[in-house]
Image 1 (cartoon, rainbow, N blue to C red):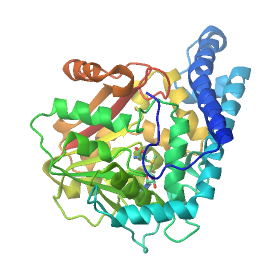
Image 2 (image 1 turned 90 degrees about the vertical axis):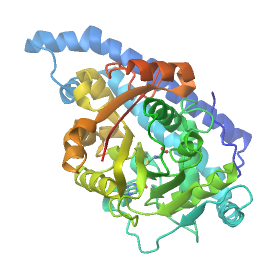
Image 3 (image 1 turned 180 degrees about the vertical axis):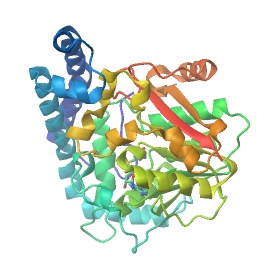
Length: 398
Ligand SMILES: C[S@@+](CC[C@H](N)C(=O)[O-])C[C@H]1O[C@@H](n2cnc3c(N)ncnc32)[C@H](O)[C@@H]1O
């Protein structure tokens, strides 16, 4: 299913811009499927046998593969094409956002005031200091990152993420680009029929793609999303209001929230932790533990850890850490999440990991089957952004 931005914050693109975006989507699909497959074949048929002959053994881990394959033309071609295409993702959507920057802000202001379709709220904290680990980077080469503001009540960075994600995901994330959380929450609800959450928090919500699916799953629950990026939470709120989904967005740091002890049934995050250094992740786990009710569940959708993957798959997924301004990515994938979660106060015996098929790609029946069989994590498509992707998530109960 192709992604379409069908809410009222949609920006108008010229036909040249639309063509360019189609081109970039096609390039990304080619790089992450065809070219990635070709690089793997070169590794298996040529580079790895050469390495074995020279060293009398196979490479032990991703970094050793990275060091070896770096010399191959295919790796250089793959990497340079992927870096350039990543820059083109953002460049292909920026002009339309620049043209409508003020208008977008005005549209969001009126959506925020109107309570006709939904009764959500948004709160901005002018005192919040965006953590340096994110403010000092253009994460995944996104110009201006999640937080920069150029006009009053700016929402441009939210729009950049939303429009950029549409191009970046080339249809893999479903119509509203909510497939990860729609899949994960569908799996979670089926697996845990005893849990009936009243209050759910999405940490690092950006523009709410990972927040709103929880309301579909649990319509009676109160839904909150937090993020340090002011433009993102404003945009997330406007997007939710436009879709008629009541959700509450706050500009807040997940390490130090203003929520009361024991107030949430589920604390969730999606594609968030790999952008955070380990020490801060430790504090985030402790904060989640503090604000969860006893018996409440913490759930994180993430990239699968290196410990459950082959050395080649580890190398392949860690590429972003070296070439895509994702400096904490590899360190996160090397972390023992279970150990950290227990240290943060969660019960060891409640730790879980699951792999969930994408609802968009495989359909509802496949997710139900996965709940029954509780698939193990040894599929080379897990976490890989390409055809056949499977979503990995983990967590524990308080
Ligand atoms: C990759 S994005 C998350 C994507 C989003 N959950 C989704 O599914 O589309 C990471 C987000 O985390 C936010 N972030 C980084 N550090 C944070 C912190 N300490 N507290 C809250 N949000 C944070 C960033 O501003 C960014 O919006």
